[in-house]
Length: 187
Image (tube, rainbow, N blue to C red):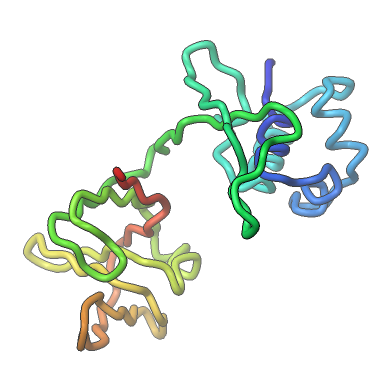
């Protein structure tokens, strides 16, 4: 299997040791290095563990002939734009099987008209992952509530909608929610 673990790790600015410690369960930098160079066989389990440690989907680590890679021109730091010390590339984002989108028609909060917000559908057992994140919550009769999830208590979700003077809303036992995971914005 052709993989891009080293490319993605370097593009994220992480060392072998940082990736090894971020794996669940943690492993050694030597093991990650061997998996990167191919001296150790990369199983699907290892691919998924490393992808989670890098914060990417496992498909981003697999080299596919039809995937478009975007070359990185420079890094933007607090000191300004800086040249790369080597070559790097990024993979175009790929939606997962649970990805949906929310289209912003009128600017609200930090969102502008024309923005596309990718949301990941979560079941009740995963609602805790969305705390302090923007979420889309289905309501009865085909309505929705979009806001920041600020609390969860006894099956009830506490949301703070966007906009000046917005008041906290409480939604009881929604079957699922959509957590914002990516913002697509034209400049």
